[in-house]
Length: 79
Length: 259
Image (cartoon, rainbow over all chains, first blue to last red; front, side, top):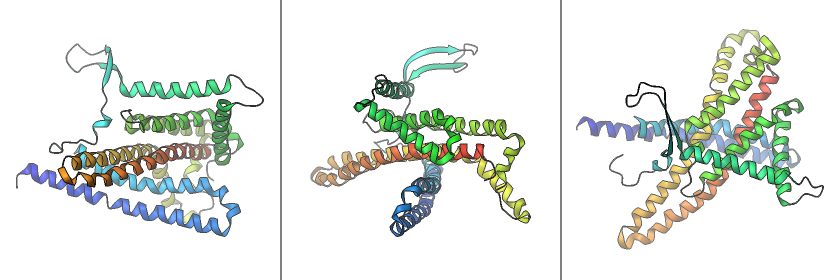
């Protein structure tokens, strides 16, 4: 295998592996929204006051998935 | 990716609309600062112009019974003002102009990007990093101006036992320093990923249509592209909201370190 093909193969495999990290962010976002929903169904009166906390937790969790996506993009287009 | 005929990141290319000139340098090729009016700058001007037109049209009559434009401008004001009040308290309202400017700029820039052939300003890291650095430097400078050395209490959460301080403080320092990184990467990554996904599905439609009788299958990626466009409009609004809420949270830390 010539070095260029090996480099391309490594880039593509690495980008694919980096995307596994997004699964963790998916689990985290699911936990946040699921727990918000179960809490909101138990006490609907308090649900509206926690909406900005929900969005904050969602944003912080989602950032982890975005970081792994950025690594994948770096491998695909910048390496 | 030379072998792919359809390049999904072509949409983020910056082109010079007209050159302003080269400043400094010694006259050789590539030296000095080259200034040009780019498509990115054009869409920043359009974004700011739309916000200005909306707010000026909405507030120039100042009727007691508001019309449609005035009602929309008032709802925008109330939305941002409630967000600032809920997150930072009443004394945070002195930062309302900063938060409202950031929110409206990011929101309108993101929504502009959803139109076909429009350039998305926030899909470039340099733009979001500058927005995040404005927030970060505001937090640091205002925190030291308001609290003096007590601002360093932001690294020591209240109520932790003394024997774990030595491990908590480095973590807090690291988390504080990574705030502008995550603040900017979140917005940039969401916008970039959404637009690339849209172009990938669009590329699938074109590739399948060229495949003869199998072209009927292209209805599947086409439907997916339509659904993703709806999702991206939601993401555009949500990320603008998240950017503004995080700005409020960081400003709250500057006003009340150690909480």
